[in-house]
Amino acid sequence: MTRSARVLLLGPYVLLLAVFFVAPLLLMLAISFSRQSYGQLEWAFTPQHYVHFFTDAYYLGVLGDTLWLGVLTTAVSLLLGYPLAYHLALTRSRAKPLLIVCILSPLLVGIVIRCYGWMILLADRGLINETLVQHGWLAKPLPLMYNKFGVTVALVHVFLPFMVLSLTGVLKRIEPQLIEASQTLGASPRRAFFEVTLPLSLPGILAGSLLVFSLAISSFVVPILVGGFKVHVLPMVVYEQVLSVFDWPFGAANAFVLLVISVALIAVYIKVTERALRGIV
Amino acid sequence: MILRSVVGLIYAFLLLPMVIVVLAAFNAGNYFTFPPQGFSLKWFANFFQRREFMQALRLSTELAVWTALASTVIGTAAALPLVRGRFRGRDLLNAFVTSPLLLPQILTGVALLQFYTLFKMQASYAALLIGHIVVTTPYVIRTVTATLTHFDIALEEAAQSLGAHPVRAFFEVTLGVIKPGVVAGAIFAFAISFDNFTLSLFLTSSKLTPLPIELFAYLKYSFDPTAAAVSAFAIGVALVLVLGIARFMGLEEFTGF
Image (cartoon, rainbow over the protein chains, first blue to last red):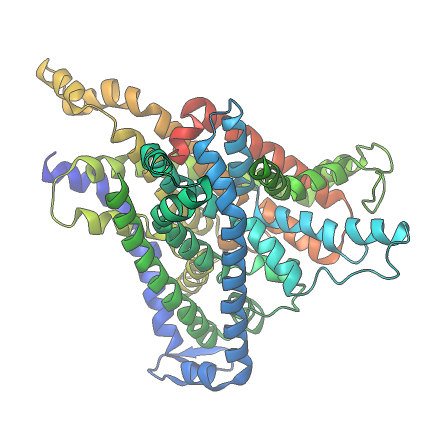
């Protein structure tokens, strides 16, 4: 392929990204160091918004809650995703395409709809509470929504497919002979799993966890709808500052804190997936 | 045996909210209770009669079609040199072109909103469309790349040595072979655009609201099952699209396992 052909083929998308992706992000960085008075943006170079963020107990608390929800979501997704991926990687069932549809279709159903499903289930007058109260098993509804519990349940549901996809890819590449060999040498199935399969799937665990964590800490639809604005997370602060308070410099600074965390995670993710592919095949 | 029942429960967890939404859409009552209160299509009737939902549906469909077309052309073109080219910085470029996929969309959304506002482009159709193309093209690049790596370049070289122009060789030989990846990429781009909420939220106005945004606005003030009918409709669309991908590319190829 000649150089000019390359430029012609790649040019349009690279140009599109430069103008409508890179430039806007750089502009956002510039805005995060600017000032705003009476709704008017004034170009400046001041770290005041970052200082504000990192010295205000409220925002530090929000940052802490965001990261904690991310950890919780990642841990539960891993716990639920591993058996699913393990089964999917090994199954010879004819229903396998159907199982893949079950994992993929939630990804293609919009996030608002999935939250709405959880709202129908978890609300005070929702399906679970209403059923339990009607049958007299409960005196008053359980607080399932508008708190961290509900938000975590919905976050796990939204991001579980990403964990399963990351894990299945790695589990599938493990040579079955390795596991058979360990069993021939006398290992019990349980020991073979813990000493062969699990260590070999570590890259997938790491990749899936990084992906889910970075997605979970940047989600704001779930905290808004299922959390009912009662669970405060960093992306929600960004949303409020930019679209309701219209404090762009502070909103941009918040966004950049989130961006730095995400980019750091993505960098490790790319390293891990590269090594995972090289290490196991 | 234990594994199978655990796995079954997790699948149930994955599908539960969608099943509930669909059941609520066909349920006669205002609240969804168990057992259901009888079958009714009135929520669907309400959905199809409300002008704002119909306008939103039309906008979303139109937007998704244009997004899919544009990102398929741009993405397929970009995938070719990324798979075949031997040049310095290819890995870096590969990471760069897929970066909109890895960066949280809320960040892309905020950045684009500020950028568009500064250049007086905010809340325009073009602005929304460009945003969607930026985030869907990496998916097309991925699916096309997946099929392109299996492609035997000798086929195209044979066509060229028989006198075909490189462009003609591409359209008559290569495109025929990588079509599954291209079509699956187009379908996926359509789906991502049709369901996109996060990016759209920052780029819309009261006159320009795609369906997910309209649904979100509706849910903030009311809880009646019209929202369930809208959702059930969108779930149906998603299922059709997954089946489309299965038909053209095969799900095992698409997901890589």
